[in-house]
Length: 189
Image (tube, rainbow, N blue to C red):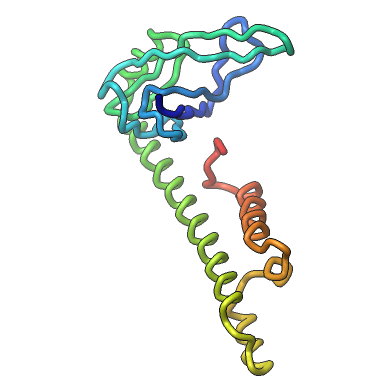
């Protein structure tokens, strides 16, 4: 059975005869593990090392009560890296012939930036949850000097610590940070 993976398109596909540009699709061709992929992503479960994989893109109805339809889509796979997504098999084959070192460097840079972003997100969230746990389990400071030192050491605002659901407040804080994050963030979330 398996689960769908999601392919996100940095450049939307314009399906002929369809008004709405398509910005992503789901597929089971690359492992079915609920992964997110973009051009440049490694596809460890790709059915081919180098080649074109055909799938069907579902175009949802544009109007309420309208009919959806499918359209063929072609994945250009180069050494198990997603090199491009095309509506025409010839374009996908041409892309395979034109992959060069600059593409590889770009994809590697993109992967390294995404790794750093996710690593930083994880460490910030872990630090806040750890601090919240420490504040729940440690005793109140014995004097004002110790309390001042504790305030310097901890970063969580008091409104989070005293919220009815501090964990929810921490998660909301991080969600807001992700929404307003700047350069280097993953663009397809």
